[in-house]
Image 1 (spheres, rainbow, N blue to C red):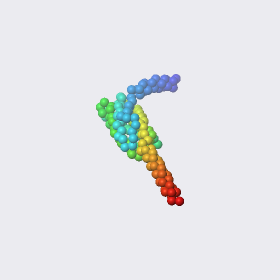
Image 2 (image 1 turned 60 degrees about the vertical axis):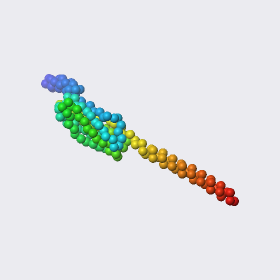
Image 3 (image 1 turned 90 degrees about the vertical axis):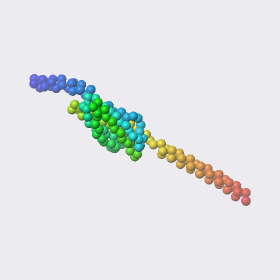
Image 4 (image 1 turned 135 degrees about the vertical axis):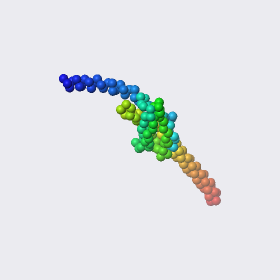
Length: 156
């Protein structure tokens, strides 16, 4: 009987704990959806139901899961926070995973966002340029040999 009473109290307490989680959240956003190597990312966010001066842990990983950045920022009196960071010039193409976490009313709340690091255009342009130059050289050699062949043919 005592076990049933305790189980009933625990069961009744669970929904109110989950109800608190609905109001507690972190929202993060970036000014663009895609960033290239060397670009500056402007990350902004807001903590709902947090306290003034709330600490927020920010973590950024590349597409391979390598840690790019880890920082702790402080929210203002309204729960707003921001962080600027530079995408490493060595960043590989793919998604950057940005995660913000904070302890709110005893619960750790986490929000994630992905941005894209596009494939740099230079390597493809380099291949096109190299192919074009090689084609011109082959054309020049062929035209030069024809002219040489005509000269040699004319002397025979």
